[in-house]
View 1 (cartoon, one colour):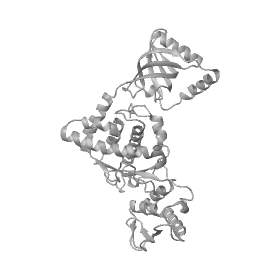
View 2 (cartoon, rainbow, N blue to C red):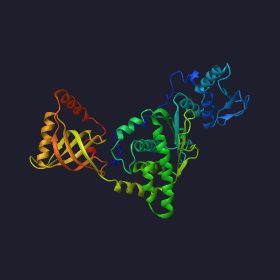
View 3 (cartoon, one colour):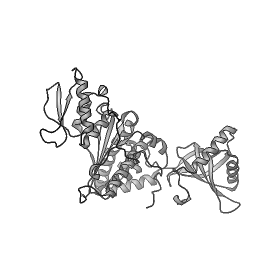
Length: 410
């Protein structure tokens, strides 16, 4: 299967799912707020069954019969045995077979906003979704998180290769839980590093839902144009399409961290945003519109030459630059006239960067520089030249930009 031209190669931080979400000893009872613990238990379906009002609450796992194992959680820290009870409750959670127990522990260990995805797919013989359906869910979730991270770094109808390293870095702390049955998945986004991403994704999904409704009612796409300022992009529409395709429908819900509270300007986020197969034509049309309408970027780049090619010993040729400054993309391809190509070749041999003026074209994901001119070598000292040469050698293995076999435009 060919990789889409606007999809990065390097695995996203969400690619490697982890089960060891909390520390070896779990959350510290001395640091746990009983109110937050109660809110997380209620969020994840635990049932409150009695207790002394204003003093303690007894919680049982979702669907547990009467008389089953329960947690005794203090209402606040005003009682002397509060910390002991919290310690016992946390130990019971760590030993609990209920999948939601692990989710509660994650929310306590790292204050996180939760994003949950559901796909309505046919069950297999064992009641679980097929392996392919589970992979589709994980892949769509990764795409959606990246779309939110890109929107947090700047609004655009189509991001392409721009800002991806920074967006990926902003998601480095995101944790992903296992998907019981393969139809649901939960991401835990740390408030400290990722709330901006969560807020943008929340706004963008609501805007995408409204724009889709408008297009289906009127046949017009103008609402998608206005939705760009709220974070909607081709990357987001592609993520929603990937989530819905092959299913009977999909939902995305967001729950804010009870420790951090609801961010300004946002609702409680309890109701999921739903998309159905009937929404796909509108989303595909919007994505195509974003791709077509995104304007080129005038830039003045500085970069090191990593590859050169021309059909003969003389004439124009194409070079590939590893971008140092001037644009937030890792590499660009530049077509140069003979004199400029010769300048680039000399810089390549001496380990010096070049500076070039041109336009980054949205076609191909902002990886191609056109109308290149004013190509000059940028002098650097010996130490900097050595550093650039080492970076050049390392860049040959850089997965952000595939080799000849992975790039049809080369």
